[in-house]
Amino acid sequence: MPSKEKVCVIVGPTAVGKTALSVELAKQYNGEIISGDSLQIYRGLDVGTAKATTEEQQGVPHHLLDICELGDSYSVADFKETARGLITEITARGKLPIVVGGTGLYIQALLFDFELGSAEGDVTNQALRDELEEYAETYGTMQLWERLRSQDQAAADLIHPNNVRRVIRAIEVIEQTGISMTAQPKVDFKDLSESCYDVKLIALESDRQALYDRINNRIESMLTNGLLAEAQQVYDFGPSQAAQGIGYKEFFPYFEGEQTLEEATEFAKQQSRRYAKRQLTWFRNRMTCEWWDLTQSPETMVDLSNDVATWLTN
Image (tube, rainbow, N blue to C red; front, side, top):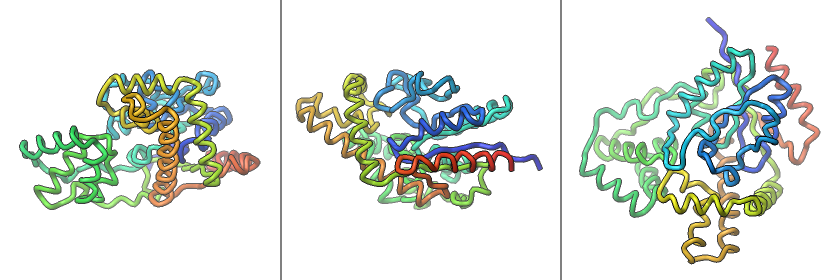
């Protein structure tokens, strides 16, 4: 039986230092970086997504940045297919694939073999679909996703709120059959031995208040570096997946004259802090990660690096 390809994965909440760690490990261990972020795929959205700049990349090859236009949709399935192909290519070049991101479902779909909605069957009701599409337009994608969650928690856990097509499909299935579209062989996402790869799953964390301070400071820095212009671009474009991104939509009320810039900024900070909390909870509850706090204990970077070296030689 052939050995599994080695993949290093770095996850964690926003503003915790994933980019810096990925570049450092890539330099040490001849790696190439694959972005696992659902917004960094968009061209022109650089500041608000904390996309690594040319200087920050330090010559390390980065993949899945700037591959979509603003109006394009990009699904978990798209990421899974593309990222798996990249892992094979990078490994064939004798280099280490390093996947970096905070979008939990992307990471889960990449590492394990499971199909979203593999048991949904051929269920189509045009009247219901029209009603759900109108519901999404009227109340927004998050409310549509909440409707799914109230009926089918399992499907909601597997589908990103921005993936309207899949959310609608899941609601169709549960309302018409009474059976979740996730009715399929159970995958234990906490058992990394079941992964398709020999994976080193590193999760970064930080003291809660320290992390919140970093998030607040990052928003202020982003505003200085052009965040508002990017948010205006997203707002002017109209409905899109990118428009659901935290750090952009919070400024829409400001553009509409309903809030001051200060109020919108505080809301963006608040939502970013809440998102970080959800990210931490998600990775703690759903996957088996090795947790490191490099912001409070930077000296442990030596131990982490040695740990990666040991894993690579095993």
